[in-house]
Length: 255
Image 1: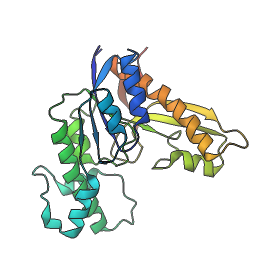
Image 2: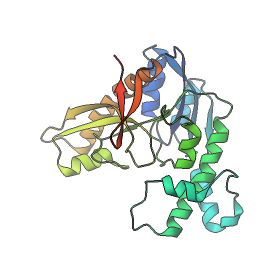
Image 3: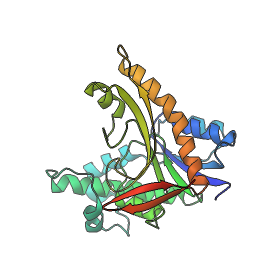
Image 4: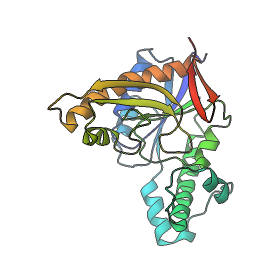
């Protein structure tokens, strides 16, 4: 058990889940504290939430990195420890038809940005990294530098759908447009695929006749703000164990 879990957070936007976790830490329903907030977006409104609570923050401008790379691939240096073939062999983000140049551009620009995030996190020792609306897929390059022990993953994400249904960027929209009668959210550990890591917890809500997409999003966020702190507290208390189950990795929750 870690009675004072050190939590790092990555965000891209408003940071409502970040606020829910901050509030839970301050209310001592999470046995820990947020030690930094990082973002890929210089305009992320969640940075103001960090400032209000005196939490250190940093920005790694993914958009600027991508623009400079497109203008001149030699203008930015790849990290010395980046192995393209190793990263590509592990990564499960691309459909089979993806072109080689597209894969190289994605993995190289991500490695540049992710190395900058790793450097920015260095001054702030942390036990768990949470993604609180971080809208960038993480590659094996980054994951392997955080998850140094495969049996003890420590990157957690919250997704706006009941996985494994509707992975990707628009979980609530996909749920609503499919005509589902139930929506929900999922907290899971990150792996090399898209929203495919071991599931920690889920919450669900009914989608009533006449509900709009905005209703679904509002109801989903209310569930997210309950679920994420609960799952983080399970981690803080040492109750989450990732075990092999055939070809799958699942989370076993200790009593």
